[in-house]
Length: 108
Image (cartoon, rainbow, N blue to C red; front, top):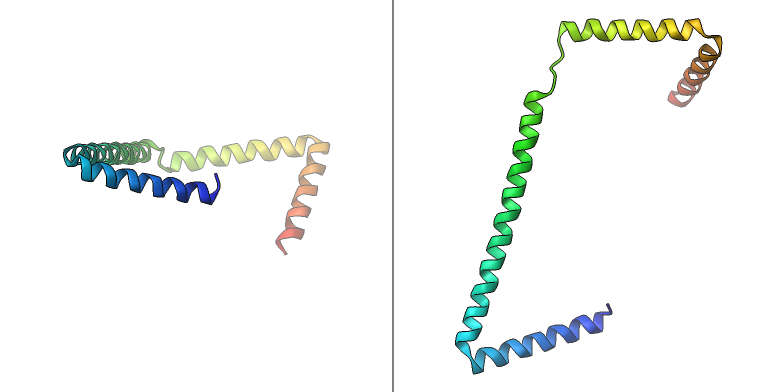
């Protein structure tokens, strides 16, 4: 849409609003009330959606697993399995060493 079309539409809308408000004030009052109700309804729905999301996020945070000693032991066991896998396959070890070298070159 061009800017001129937007401006022309705004002018035509303003002129129509002025015409209706002067010729039929009761109709203009009802229309403005309907628009106000519609905006209030939309705002209420948006607020309830935001509140619902906040509640879902809060519930997700409560149900998220918390770190514990058991988690640390499981993590250590997983890392040991990964290291043993890397050591068991020479091609995997070469790739890991290559990635480590690239990572250390980028870090410095």
